[in-house]
Image (tube, rainbow, N blue to C red; front, top):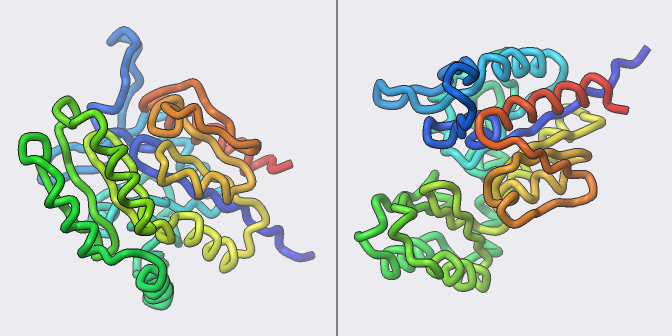
Length: 274
């Protein structure tokens, strides 16, 4: 009897499954707050969390499906996360620019991605120079280049000029780039650099019959649209835009409890895909 084709689960991490202290949204009385598990430490400080219940669900999901962390983080940023459950055989970093197989970059995939970016987009140097020229140290805390693939800023949201992100998005659009505002970070990413392309490659390699996905930001929209079913939380860019699609479920939960609900839905569907 032939083995059953696996279910592939590709999920964004930050503000989808894991949450900084500022993003937890613990609006309930203190005595009713969920127990939290720290899953990331940076410079000796706890940085990201999920609920203990979510941690248990993720362990179960790792046994029930091919779980693929799918993040805009660089490889270094991803590798400091300590997720519960079995180590993922595949992970997607740098918004699809790096496909990790058992923790090691697939160089063939990376070369295919960089060749496409060179053919289809304005160069990173042009975008970086524009960011340097149009930002103000009053509200920009950091300029960063990620994996020589895209750029992002760390900003003070309350000081950010109201129309600056929209103006940047218009400028970037004509050069084959997209812009995403996530918390205190503003990303400028080449349009062909997508999570969905990398997920399709993992689906091809694993022979997955069904792909499930979750995410909260504009950079997750293509991932959600490429999946057979998807979920988004009640916070984030997509929720702010009331974004949805036929196979997407918009959940009401916000903050770390949304991460728990997303994992519950992913696990339930992976176990009973019909």
